[in-house]
Image (tube, rainbow, N blue to C red; front, side, top):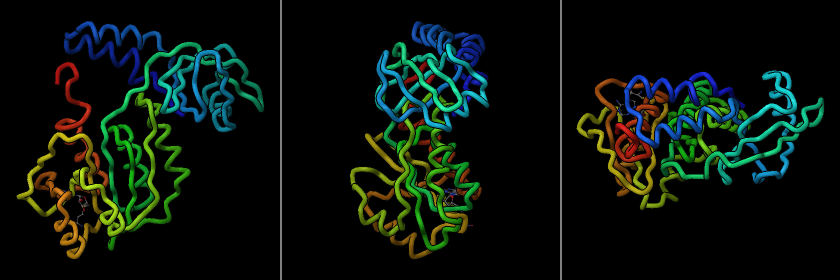
Length: 278
Ligand code: SAH
């Protein structure tokens, strides 16, 4: 659950508009829209429709009541990954019961870019950071991997899900990325759909370049702190769908590499294209 007022919504858009002096109709509409948009966003599991009340979970109840200190009558935005985004009003906010009433649709559901992140497991706190940033950068699916040198404790999927949900609430996405079950690199490659290019971030392959190309779907592969082994590197390079890429002359931490690769892909081939100023 996230507070989204400060750096996004009305403030953020207004700042951008004055700063770059642009202001086409789309942006102005967006700004008007966002000015009217509630300050807080919540992801809910159930269906959303005007007038169809939604009962919140205990965690959400606690968050609204004790952290944000909201009350019945206050406004919020709701999304569920399927039905777009709704403005809603708190109908009931009692010690054990919270009910929201969706009022009207603010945005239609739309799909972001079809980009996956396959990431070898690293220390838990760093993997959680990576998951948060991947969500902000529009990843549709996170695929945690075991590889020869992967480290990290057991993955706490529930925690990871909560982190990604919060990131989605904060960054105004209309969905929350899916987390695939942990699998080995070998299993991942064996079941891969060849139509989805797998951009293998190879830290010592300076010749690889950063050739992210537009395609309907794609995935980025990041190794663990110790990198992939020689045998894994060979195995990767034998696959037709694997495209080695370089992220420059410095060796990045795995989580930095993930952010860099996703940003490059989004700018070159993903949903950053076609926006004003792009
Ligand atoms: N210990 C390894 C570095 C691993 S960095 C070594 O010293 O060689 C962790 C992961 O981040 C790598 O497996 C790779 O997927 C990615 N990465 C880091 N820097 C990169 C770069 N400059 N180009 C491409 N990938 C990079």
